[in-house]
Length: 253
Ligand code: 13P
Image 1: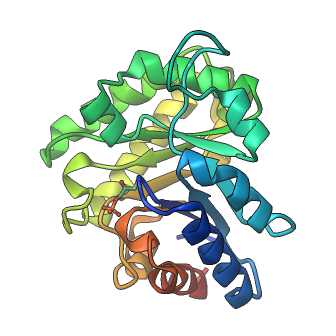
Image 2: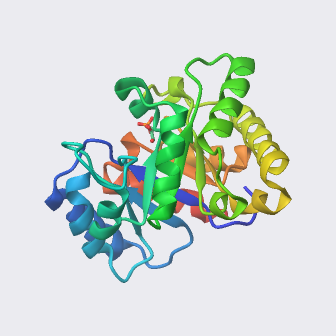
C-alpha cells in the first residue's frame, strides 16, 4: 500500500467476556511500543465500557458491532448510538454481512443507522460485499450497496466514514479474495465517491478489506491490493495472532 497509516480492525463478533476483553487490551498495550497503525477493536456491547477504560490513554479505538437506528424508544433489547457513545465507543460497524444475512438488514436501514451514528459522534464503518464470487456481479452489487448505504450523506459526513469491502464468500471460509480484484473494487468505489460526492472525499475515506485475513497473508495482501487496512474476524481473537498481523502489516508501511 502507499505511504499511509493502515487501519487494522478486530471484529470479535459474539466472543469474549469483559475479563477476556480487558486482558487482551492490557496485553496489547504491554507489547506495543509504537503506534504505526490505526488499531481498533469492535467488541461485544457488554465489553464496551470496560474495554474503553482499559484502552484509555492509548490510541487504541474501541467500538461496537451494531446499533439501532432510532434515537431512543420502545425497542426492547436494542442499543442506541448515544448509549454506545456514552459507554465509550468511538465507532460502530454497520451492515456487516452477518447482520444483513442473519438479521435481514438492508441498505436503507444501514443508511439510517449511518446518519444516526454521525449525529451522535460515532464513526461509521460501513460494510459492503457481494454474496458470490462472480466478479462482474460483485462490482455492481457493491456499487449499489455503496450508493444506498451512503445516500443523503454530505461530503463532510462521508469524510467521517470508513468503508469495508467484505465479500461474503470470503468471510470465515479461508477463501481470501484476490488482491488484484480487491484493488479493482477499491478503485471502482473511489470513482463512485468522486462522481457523487466530489474529489475532495476520495483520500479521506479509507477503504478496507475483510475476509479470511490471517497473520500469514495480511502483509502480502495489503501490499498487493493497496487497500487502506483490514477488518479481521477469527484471527483477531488471539492476542498473539492479532499482534502478528499488526506487526507484519506495519513492517513495510
Ligand atoms: P474472518 O476474518 O473470520 O473471515 O471474518 C471477517 C469478518 O467478518 C470481519 O468483519
